[in-house]
Image (tube, rainbow, N blue to C red; front, side, top):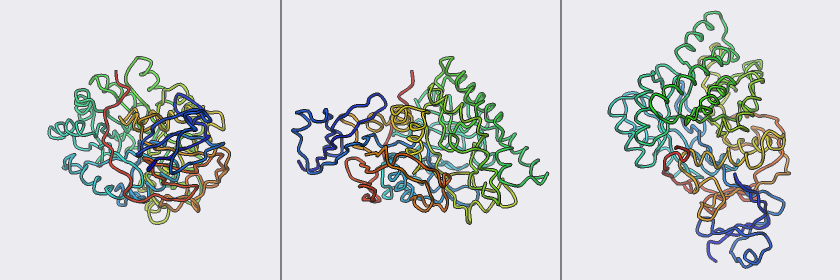
Length: 467
């Protein structure tokens, strides 16, 4: 009986099923499911019983796109691995995949070692890393093979941010050719950064310095163009492609066209593009700076295409791109020059709740909620079925979710280390009640009972969607 937990009476929701079942947990993993009230379920004894009557029992969320402690624009993201993973747990996310950064002139190994040191012993939930590749050369390409072998199986490149993370088409092609051989997955920030920099320079010369111009210069057409170009380069290389933070309907159309052709092309969007818009960027008194991120927020009429893409599976994943900067002292660096506003929004704590609200609003089904937030990111990045589902043998990463609870999102009550909420005042139906990570209670009836250091580094296999 030692180390056993039984969750009784809840509606277990996975990407494929909804069943009224009890869940038996042993030694940090799911041991069995049985129909509530059945003889097998009634025979289970355990030292801990959790009553989930009237609640959902769902897999812990997998957020495949976060940036804790990321240096950017002369400052750094305000959430540490400790504060950020604690906030993630509060929001029902039990695994994050963060990004280790290779700086130009540095090896991939140096970047990975740096990020491992930041996270080690500090995380409340399990974590893994993607690798940002900023300097493609023969040594980097060889290192990519070694990283895939040890469980870092995805590599991010940028068509944006010249002088920082930017890769040209030749560098992108070489990395894609390598990933085609070693089984890795290239993740792409698809915006034409060279063209955007011209538009930034011209806007500032005209005296257009407010935050709203951040969205106006980073044009949807330049996201679509870069998405198209990335798809064609991947096609030439014979490599799979995952496009991050898709925000524009024109970019969704490029992904849909490629998928209709049978290409291994995948797309991710984020809650900010589904729920926020250029109206937020245009808020007066520099408040719009809170909403500066890249790709940028789009006019509201883009949202319908994103929701449709999630329903038709032209978009497969909703991640947060959590990269918080405080309004005071960080976002304010861009007063008088929108190009100096640190790019990023807080959101790791809000994703599961916002997507449940999307269920309530009729945008997606309950199972699709779990699919885009838990199962597909786990499969996409080689963590399934250890993560992302409730099934015998899976890690006991489980959320007891109250679908009837009501809450109002606010910086006063959130747990992210940032002085504002991107969703301040938004009313949501549904709330995380209890969270288990590998069978340990991290959130217990709305109280944090976890600890820094519980979360462990999790190596990954390759993408489970590839032909």
